[in-house]
Amino acid sequence: MFSFNLDKNFKTCTVKFRISHHRGIANVVTSGILLASVSIIGVMLLGWSQTSISQQQQEMDEVFNTQMNKIREDLIFENIWFATPSGIMTANHLNVTIANVGILGLNVTSIQVTNVTGTNNTSFTYTYTDAGVVKSESLSLNATYPWQSSDELDVIVFTNRDNQFISQVVAP
Image (cartoon, rainbow, N blue to C red; front, side, top):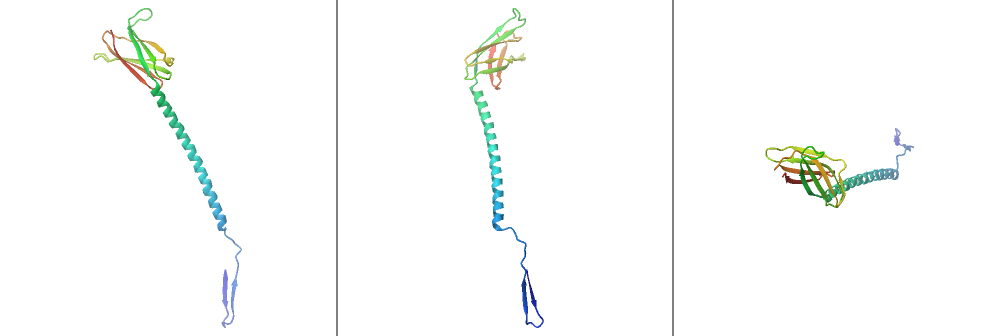
């Protein structure tokens, strides 16, 4: 800050300078603070993106593996035979024999038998908790079902990977 004095006769002129003791932050210091702030924010964003990307990759791997396992699961119906009441079986029943021809073991969770004859379309679902079939092995399951001669039946086998395998048969 400065002041300028001129006397009345215009002979003397004094100029006074007063130096302020307040100093601002130097450009170098402000640049350093700004650079450090941007670096910290950049590192935080990089860490967040890496976490997010790895989570997405893990989810994609799980979906891919699940779908591949569903594709690799395969079974065939070896035999479906109809039986009339005998011994401890007091009603008509059918026996479903399936073979695992896939490259993975599978677990049968239920078998649904549906009568698709025009006059009768009853459906029964039989659930199983311990119906695992290892690769290249067979499994026979017995199901009580009130079939009649010439009934057309859809037999659907459900697995724990949500696959469905269907066969159509006609009762003798």
